Image (cartoon, rainbow over all chains, first blue to last red; front, side, top):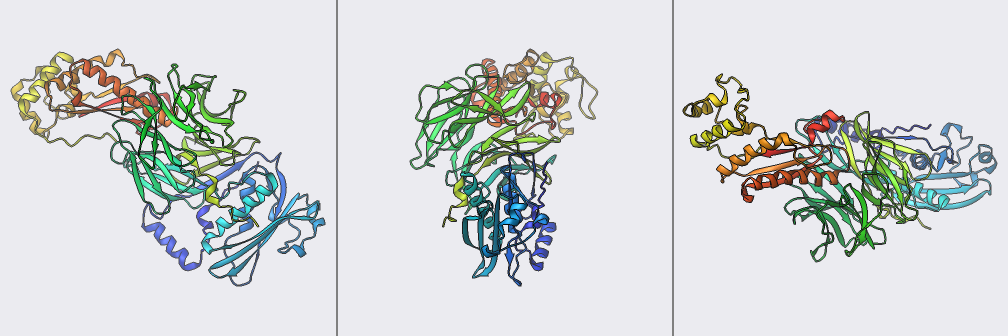
Length: 452
Length: 177
């Protein structure tokens, strides 16, 4: 059992005294805008399959040392995947920062399969960060790279290096530079404040995208990671908005009588599937974002909701209770006959396609408990991924290795992350208040600029 | 948590009189719960005394008056169903008659679900519950223009907590005047 609790506010990069003092004053003085409750992250399980790796503290130049431990961030990123077991820094016999300083026999004795080293040097506008990754047994270099970073961008730089290491060693893209959107609410407040937030995948750097005294739900990322669609009741009725994260500019895209819910971007980003009940009961519609043309895809007196696109854009899976209980169906993305996908149990809802399109994560009721289940679309079999009583809102990591979902911990709303293969799991919680309705961003955000 | 539309306080004597008449036939035996009330049971009041009571309590509308049968505005449901339980038929009828007599009044039927299951499915379930109350009222002669529906799904629980006791109180439709 491994336990990492990162007090994230303490890790904010450019903590020189003046700024730290200002930040502290703002924390005390101003409410929501500055005092974003930090997310704590706990990791458990999954060490059996994990590969030992040594991440040596990055070399620093004497005067301009940043207060960000890149090696620690990289190690934590790799540990959270369950695929790697970084050696404790205190166990490292040597601290090379250049290739010529590496003695592979030392690392072999420590049992590290791989070794990563790096250096941070002052450069115009911030820092230049270089790193190298080695195969200890073959005594060869696997990868290296150099990145420039502002002081405040060093955490992000560390995540990018972690993703590069992960991809080189597993063949899968890493998700350390991705982000997670979620809904946060203050608990037991007479005047509820609900906000849609976006944090880094390790829970750091939470930022409020929008907040209201009315419910906000169902955030959905655009495939380029630049916009979020969501449902807000801020005008006392549900409406769907699309908001650009960089500018905060947003557009009201659906505000019909009745339900305006479940927004889901098509994989090409050009269309938005949604649930509208304007014609009497909840049906699936697709809105063409360029032309504004709205097309109804389902026509049934039952509840049809929670549309989700297959990654190839060919299908829309959705929840319907047309057979008496909520089950998952799919239909061609241009409309057509629906085919039932979920076979077991009396409650299967809110499907989310795996990035490879071969399976769906969904909410299933099992002996009275609502859990996250994985439905294999080829074999038709299901497998449980979570163990809570009221788990919901599954969303795949863009590399397909993990699923994030909403769960309760000691009666409080937190986020759980389960590995699809292997036993590692994570729990993200907010210092105060509850969090729910997570949506994992696509890969596009991290950028793949590292390639040599 | 309960959103009460800001209607103009133009409640007149005849309107209250109707409330009393409706009340008289719906639940005459209901005990008087008026805070600092007159001690009269609703059915025993003289119509002429009502405006005075109303003024003393600050122009209270009948659905805000605990002594009025219109005060009961919440219909509870069983799990994952929108079927109206027999014990709520009278409650809905009472409101339907009142609305039938007051075509200028509009209500929002606000549907809710408990937290179990998925949020968007619960939004649909809350709407289905609101719609089943709406259908009942339409059948009772209420004009369609008087009825709006709104579902909050599981987003606005009346009671926090993760037990059957809380869930029971959260599966509801509120008639909001």
